[in-house]
Amino acid sequence: MSLLITNIGELMTQDADATVLRDAAMVLEGERISWIGAAAEAPAADEAHDAEGRAGLPGWVDSHTHLVFAGDRTAEFEARMAGQSYAAGGIQVTVEATRAAGDDDLDALVRARLVEAVAGGTTYLETKTGYGLDVEHEARSARIAAGVVDEVTFLGAHLVPAGRDAEEYVDLVCGPMLDAVLPHVRWADVFCETGAFTPEQSRRVLEACAAAGLGLRVHGNQLGPGAGTRLAVEVGAASVDHVNHLSDEDVDAIAGSWSGGHHGTVATCLPACDLSTRQPFPPARRLLEAGAELALASNCNPGTSYTSSMGFCVATAVLQMGLTVHEAVRAATVGGALALRRATGEDVDGARAVGSLAVGHRADLQLLDAPSATHLAYRPGMPLVREVFRAGTRVR
Ligand code: NIG
Image 1 (tube, rainbow, N blue to C red):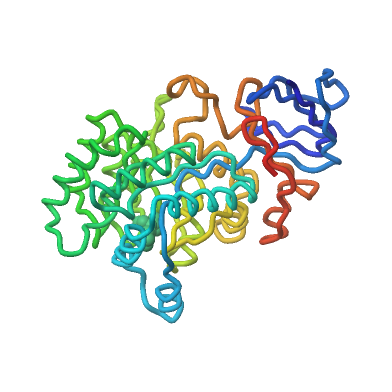
Image 2 (cartoon, rainbow, N blue to C red; image 1 turned 90 degrees about the vertical axis):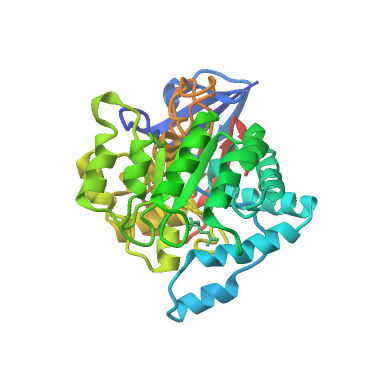
C-alpha cells in the first residue's frame, strides 16, 4: 500500500545536505519513505493526500523522557517557583507513588503520555525506568515501557533510595537489578551529580551495564560543574544529558569525541527542564562551534519538566539559547536520532533510520498549520502540529 503526500509547501528534510524543498511531495510505502521530491514529478501511488501547502518536517525524536511514573509533584514545583532550589531528593516522592500504582494503571499512564507526545509531533521516543529503585519495580517499569515506547533505558541509578547504603545499592543495580531489566532495555543511564551518584559509583554502574551489552547514557553537569560529562565521553556514552555547567575541557571532550569520523557523545539539551529548575541554559552555541553534535529533548518527568512538547523545546532553544530554527529543528530530529544511534539504517540491528526524511528511512513526518518551521519559534506555544505520520501510519 503506497500513499502520496503532495502539495507540501516547504519540506525540511534534515537529510545530510539539509535540503529544503518547496512544493514537495513524498511517497510512503508501508513504514518507509520510498520517494521524495518535487510535487510536479511525483509518481502515482495507491492513495493520495493533499497537504494543502503546509510545512513538513521529520517527526520529533525525543531522546530523553521519564514517562513511567505515578503521582504528582505540584507542591514541589510551587515551592521551587517561590525560590527553593531543585534537589534530586524529590525523586523519592515519585518512587513511592509509582510503587503504589497497579500494573494496569501505570501502563495506562505511560500510554496516555505517549499519546500527548505524538499529538505534539513526536514520532520516536525514549523513556527511562528510575522511579522503581528496587528489583521488582525497576523490572516492572522496564517491561511496561518496552510495551509502549521505541527505546527503553535502565535508570536504576537515579537516586539512592531512602534508608539504603549507597555502595550496597550500587551492587544491587549492577547485579540482580540489571539482570531483571535486561530483557526489556537497550540503554543504561546514571545520574552522576552531587546528591545522586559519585563519579566512581557512576563508572561502576556504566561498566557493569556495558559488560551486559547495553549502550550508555549519562545525566551530567545539571546542577553544577562535575565529572559526569568527561566520564560519559570516556566510557563512549551515546549521549550526555543536561550539560548546563560545562568547563572548556568538557566542551572540548564532547567535541573531540566526534573527531576522525567517530560516532561520539551527543550533548543533549533539555530546555524545558532548565526553565523549571531555573538552571542556566547549556552553552549550545559554544558546543556547536567546537564541533559537537547537539540534541534537544523534553525530559518529560514529574519533577523538573512536566511537558513532552518538543515544539516548546525548539521555540525555547531559538528564543533563549541562541540557536537558529534550522539548528534547533536539527537537534530535535537528527540530534535525537544520533543520541539514540538511530540516525542511519546501519546503526543497530538493521532498524530503519529516524530523524530525517530520505528514501529508505522510517516514514515519520509532521505537517504544520504554518508555511514554514520558523513559525514554531515565531508563534511559540501555538498548537501548530496538524498531522502526524508515524512509521507510515497517520496517527493524528
Ligand atoms: O532529568 N536528573 C535526574 N532526573 C530527572 C529529574 C527527576 C525528578 O526530579 O523526578 C531530570 O531532571
